[in-house]
Length: 115
Image 1 (spheres, one colour):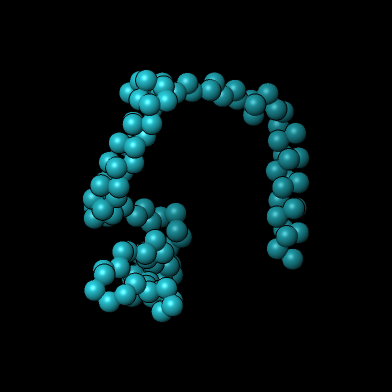
Image 2 (tube, rainbow, N blue to C red):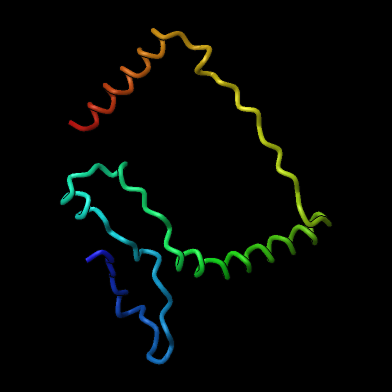
């Protein structure tokens, strides 16, 4: 099965007659297929299904209206420009020996956690 479904606890289930909403833990499981095909996860690029985007569109629209309303009330504007921080390339100032040392230290720590 490609879709896993975990039913809710009966104690918190909605009364009959009221429809249940989709659960956030419903997802497509492709692990078994990858193992059968002997493929690493990086080779599989899973596109977001169209119905996921369509279902989320209404909630995004409501969220955007709420945010726009708050911005008008609090700041009196429709949009607030976001300034992007200039990211300096710290790695370019590092020497090769220092880089190798850091990678080795991290790898030793990772292997120590596995034991």
